[in-house]
Image 1: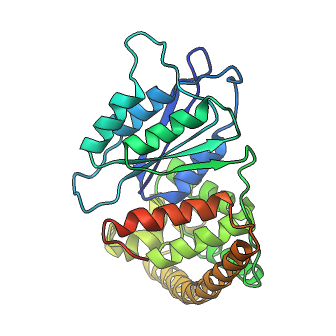
Image 2: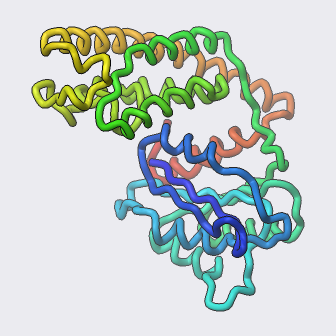
Length: 301
């Protein structure tokens, strides 16, 4: 599951803005796209408040076999001068009690941030990563991207939004965001969705709901269907659903196979970049950190 917390400072548009842990990566991506840098520029920021929100407000699992990680990303140090405000040394100890790891990612080179980010990581058994302000993200194009983009279009043609107008609009918005996303993000999403057997994460898609048994065929409410499908009789509707199901299942098999080839290509390119001394991109550093921390929990992938 993923959650998201944006933080600024007192006097800005908001201090913290939180989106709870969810397996709906489409929703998280949408929230992430809504965040924009604003205010700030005066350092420090409300880092402590954001950490407190992450540690105490997110619905973390109590299972000690679960890998639980907070990534603190920012360029400015925390305010330590707010009366009665939370302080990161105490928060790190509280995180440790909950078996939470805090990894810190410093964007840019603000000198006063680095020692604090390193201390936070050390106190919570996490890792410190420093990256350029731009993120230095290595975007690797692959020979499979064009075909995956085509398959994404075909998956979209099988969507049957289901629910009230708001829920149906969310399904359309998630797919629209996926179509307009960078190719690498689109391909990653498509791979994840196909492995989970879904076309859209979250609620509001009829074939997905029938597949995961949150809805039965006989329970379908015609009024919750798109307008053009409401006029179909039961037999016609069942045929339409079966057609969408079968087409999607075939497409998802193709996507899984293509994704394996894409993953292999990207791994080879990452090794080549590392050998050339260019393997310090943000995504590579995060991947290395996750592998090491997951291994301590007996998780390998």
